[in-house]
Length: 504
Image (tube, rainbow, N blue to C red; front, side, top):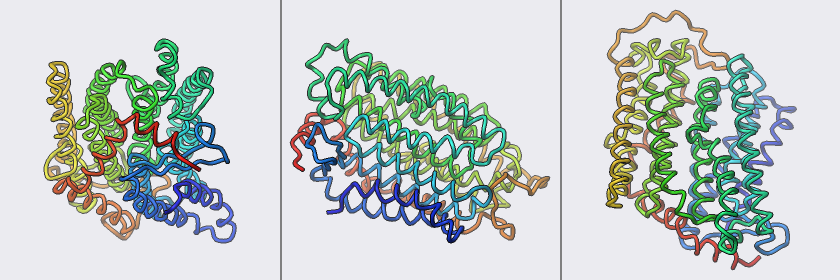
């Protein structure tokens, strides 16, 4: 059996080796992330079959739980690590021709560190190491948002850093309070002993931890950093921030709520907050004329829907939430990748500048359209079965409040459809706009001899397209794994037993 530690150790080591490789061959830097992520994808998929039966618990440091640092490679963690590796791999291939200017070796090093941090978050069984891996993810993100070194990017990165630092501080204070109460940082051990103290004692650390994680998850009202960061970063990084970073934040929120605190008292509040986040995100997206800001606010809306589904806290609800999370990850990554080259060709991020782009870049615009239709939830794309499961879960509760909330969620989907169809109408049903600029966006150089995006961009985009269509038509391909992941996330007692009974 492959050791899950390698999922963190190999990409981490290769990330720090990139400057060394660049000393001998500067062009080597861009090939290291794809190599590392192919390794992680293969290892994750090989582990997935094993962990569907029993989680793999790895103890580090020569101590037994709860005093050791441990990794918990269960269905949820390994599924997420596979998704991180897959999306990261496809985006790294896209970046081969997309990232040409600036300190490219630093870009690729930070990119790999970001994904390593995300992988660590989903695999760790130790709440302090959750914080450490989050910091690796966040600090890498701050630097990558400012990668182009333009005014907008630097300003957005500073805003992101300030809000992220506040979130990290709240998270660390909450972890410190838990350590003061239980004298341990192992999540399973804290979960086992949490009923030994009064509910009031754990309420404050719970609020601090969830709020701190909520900043990275972009839950309203903690999402002010997101539109600027997504619109100012290179589109390859926007795809990762929207497709991986905020989803990892949401995973962490679910993990601490379901596993550590095991509380239902906050779930109704999270369901309400999810719908509020959804409606605000969709309405803000509807009002945007900048395509990347529109996609950024769309991510806020999607996070709200996923949070609502997870807060239903039933097997159907959590399965639907995880399905929607995977659907959003693939669809939104595809949308940002397609938008990157559409923006380059138009020389502007304004939606009106994309008039007739479907005739200029037919393959890229087709990929964008499929991603948009999937996100809206149209059949036969991946977003349809995921949203159907969420609706089914809400109705199955037979509670009037959840019926009202899912009705509001469907209203949000109508708004979402309106702004995406507006973009599709501009792409295909407007006359071709005269290209006033071929300069494009700083740091982003496609093949000037091609009407469409280069092959290194089209291949990743159409792999996303194939996945979105195939899973949309045959959702059974993923629902068994997602059901297992949902069961694991809800089975707090089994998690505690698996970790604390593990042997070195």
